[in-house]
Image 1: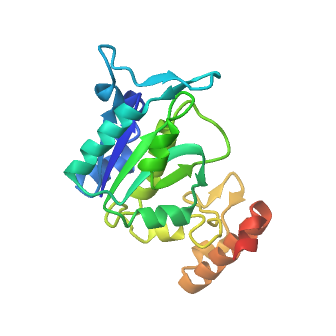
Image 2: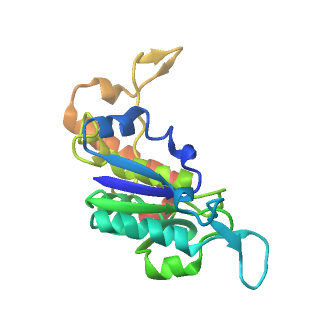
Length: 226
């Protein structure tokens, strides 16, 4: 999979993909992430990418020409399955969206900044709009990193144990059960005996029960969706 990210501040995206699982995914050749500096396509000697909004009002708006030029350049090089705008008023990201996007081949992520982007970019080029929550950040770079991570870890071969992602929270509209590691007894705090039984079927039944109970307690709305 290849993901191209368009950003006004690309330095914000250096660290998220240079470590841990995302780094391994790229080293294995399973994921390719390219971050493009929008200012390289800005206008005039100052590489301008934003301007005042028509009708007045506070905040600058990202201009249409630099974004359109870069998107069209990328489209001339390969076919993209989706062009996604990271925005607070987009669809709230859910695990099902990540699952679907992990099946794609090429994606473009556009990071908003300032007051937002010229609406015509959304009308002409954008195929999906995604939000990571009902709050506002300084730009779309952190949400883009979240989206790439949530997609990349699902690619076959990325995780050492490919079945691991199947048991993540939200995969079945249930939260993941509690997990434990050594020591089995820490200052009198013991792990559930069932986990030491070696009885695989009973352990799985316990985990299913714990997932349901945890979901009912913390996110009952997920159960209503089932």
